[in-house]
Length: 151
Image 1 (cartoon, helix red, strand yellow):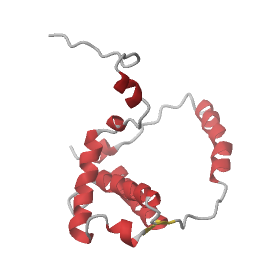
Image 2: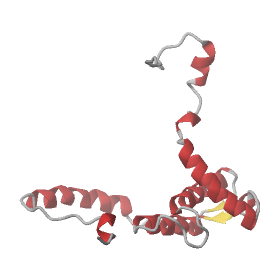
Image 3: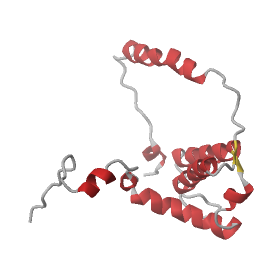
Image 4: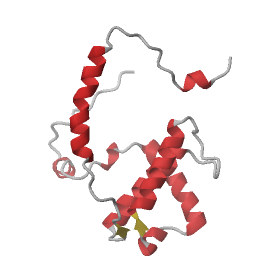
């Protein structure tokens, strides 16, 4: 049985044309929602549901937590050993709290003074192309997490 593809560009239903102007919440992966919800459940049982909306949060605290969870995942530790929840689930929950706290007016914005990051990245980016061209004849082995596994 072949499924018919849906043409999302033209529809005569007036509800569709109105709906097409709304935030497309269906685009956010349900897998990410499920993972984030597990991390929020941990927070609910530890701290109380929606506690940040009352207590407020500092940007720097959640920025640091996001980076810790992302770096742990990047280094090959999929599950946070302190709670048994995936690091990526905890990272997405931290980002969601930052977004929600900002929308609720409960975010203390203690981000650092601008230090020229955007300008530096713009300056360094052409170097990537230059270095790639300079060493185009090299064929180095690129190590990955697979190289951690013992035979």
